Amino acid sequence: DGGITQSPKYLFRKEGQNVTLSCEQNLNHDAMYWYRQDPGQGLRLIYYSQIVNDFQKGDIAEGYSVSREKKESFPLTVTSAQKNPTAFYLCASSLGGKNTEAFFGQGTRLTVV
Amino acid sequence: SQQGEEDPQALSIQEGENATMNCSYKTSINNLQWYRQNSGRGLVHLILIRSNEREKHSGRLRVTLDTSKKSSSLLITASRAADTASYFCATAPSGGYQKVTFGIGTKLQVIP
Image 1 (spheres, helix red, strand yellow):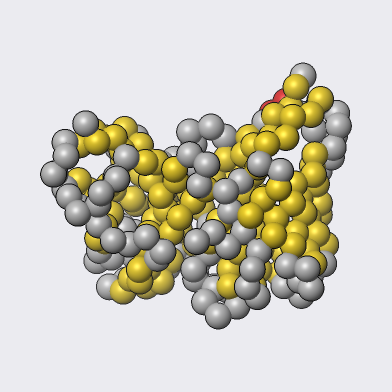
Image 2 (spheres, each protein chain N blue to C red):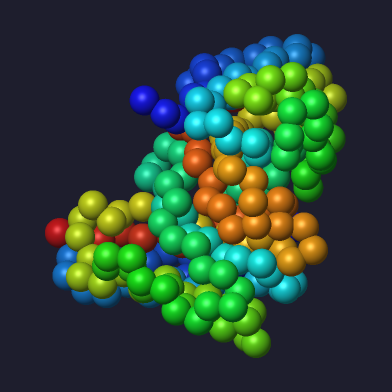
């Protein structure tokens, strides 16, 4: 089945620790995205990548890092520099053209304990 | 900052009624998209309307776009309990269509 997979579904992290969220797609999409969702604030763009080995900051990139070494994979690392990391994280992919829809994973809920 | 803003933020209707949600945005766009999210899940794409289109239909969905007013509406006709979800508009700006940004959403409840 083609799709986009995020893991894990739930993640707990101690303050001061880095943590990496996985996102894999087998849709052969060029573009991939990371969004953060907080209650009442909708989705905010963290990072996006239009092609392998290239990525751009979104609106709230501080405290996050990404890599795009393979077309299928776009992992997000939440670093200790992120002051308020507890949130629902959504990964998406698209063909990358001007008028293309995004396909979303099921999300990872990160909680800092 | 959020590009799109949905209105109303919450909507409760009876099954069989129509539901209308509105989205306003600030900058010129390449396209506008509507997505649906069931609680705690990922988003599902519903419909995309390009900046040179005014209306689009998909099943029970009707989307309109008024670029002069920088607004869009999503109409769900003959709603069902299964339509209960949050609905988001997303805009792809003309100057950087890769940076798709989302509004805060409309939470729709359809009462059986």
